[in-house]
Every structure is written in structure tokens, then in C-alpha cells.
Image (spheres, rainbow, N blue to C red):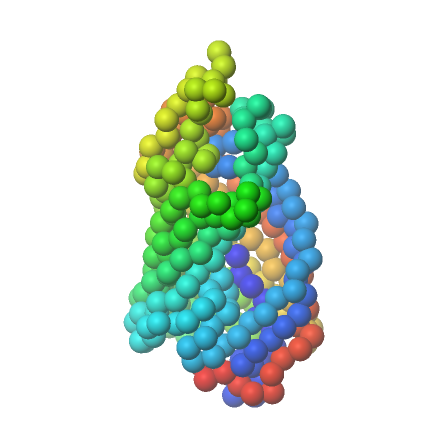
Length: 258
């Protein structure tokens, strides 16, 4: 999802920006679920564009490598939790908590022409359950090819990606321990591999000096997924979407170096 960019200072974007971010999102409870989960949140946000310390568009931490072709930094992602009481296929099983992901992200800048930029991302993330004392739930790898457009008013990005997970992460979504097995839901041991294919679109538009509206949608397919045979897979495709509004009330007078 594109994070707010604020208004550019003279000579380039400001070194830092801060404000409030409100958004509402809806997604399948997990890839392959029939039921959906929705959240509406208002959060503070911060962008910092230092030469080494970065917090911008889903990346935060030390930028270990930066060349015209490659960047290496720390990336983040999240997935909404879901109560098993509201997901029929998981009735009586543990809830799916709010999953937070963090890990190194390698970015390869493939080509740039005017406002258009092609790039490939390779994020490797550890997955933690924020609803269960940050217990680790496994590892994800999500290679993606992305086309990004940055204009003065509009920004957008289109991408295709493959979400892969180790056995522990796959078991979080698709495993059925014998103690939770029923006649309709036999025991199942999840396997590592492809979780889902993803196609993403994100757009944002500046409304005024301090305001920006943004939205996103994601299509998922379980074609060829490693755990399509799990009794917890009820659908082989799904869609997520969301919309939000950001306010950048504070920004630095100093411009970022890049």
C-alpha cells in the first residue's frame, strides 16, 4: 500500500514528515478463506528520509546498501487477524491473530523513464503474532515485480507477486492438528511452498497542502498453492481493498538528500 508522501519542500521532499493516517480495509480472513475481516484505524505516522536511516513507504531502519541499481533495507508488512468464531472452517480452532512481518528487503531498480519506474523487490520477513505476545509464526518470502508512477499530484503502483511461506507459517493458516479434527475437517499437516499469487494496485492523490487520499486493491489466487488440499481452503481466489486519508501537519524545512 502507498503511504502518504506529503508536499515537497524546495529542492526535493522534506527530510521528515509527521501526521495522522486513517484507513479502512477489508480482506479475506486468510488466503483461501470464505469469510472476510474488516478494520478501521486512525494512527500517527512518520516519514524520515535520511541518507542511512529511513522510514518511508513500508521500509524502516538502516539502509545498508544503496546504488543506482540496488537498495537493501528493512521492510515491514501486516495482515489483519480473524476470530475463529467468525470463520466457519476454523470453528473451535485458535484465532488468527494480527500478524506483523519484518525483515530485509532487496530492491533492484530495473529501469526508469520520466515518472515511470520498473523495479523488482525481494523481501524476506519473519512473521510474528501481535495477539499472542509476538510469538513467531514462521517466515515469508514475497518476490514482486512493480511498475510505479510518481507525479506531482497522483502516484500509483502496479505489481505482481508470489507469496511463499515455510512450513510453520503455512501451518498457521492451513494446518489442522488431530485435536481439532472433525468429520467435516480432517487432520491436515501443512507444507512449505507457495501460499498465493498476488496482483496489487495502489493509488494516492494530493488533495491540498496537507491532505492526501489513497486506496488499494489486491487480487489473490491459490492456483498451484502448496496447501490447496487443506480443509481450511474454501475458495481459490479472493480480493482485498481499502481506502484512507492522511494529514501531514508537520514537516522539516530541510530537504532530503535523495
